[in-house]
Length: 117
Image 1 (spheres, one colour):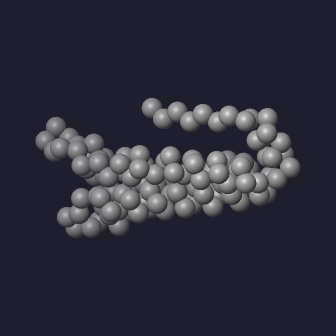
Image 2: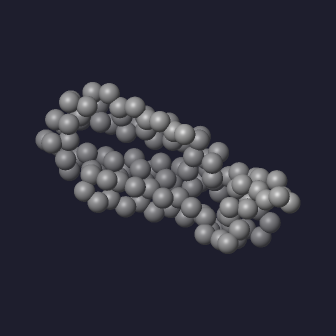
């Protein structure tokens, strides 16, 4: 389980109220760059036989109001077998390690940028 704790909510609420557009741009920029980093990391370690799984790893960032979401995922019928393994094949994780390597950096960059507003 991943738990993220944010302190300074009253100050953050005031910044969000007065600088909404700046905060939205900041969030989009950081989530977009973080998604690219996770995608690149996964592509760097994914097992390659034909290259199809590696080529299928995509990312998409969307924003609706103050919600910004980055989704990084492979698009094959067998991606989960490689990531998690089967009863006949050992797991060869590529998405999870990339996420684990990058998520703290993404959150830290967002925190730093919010402080600088």
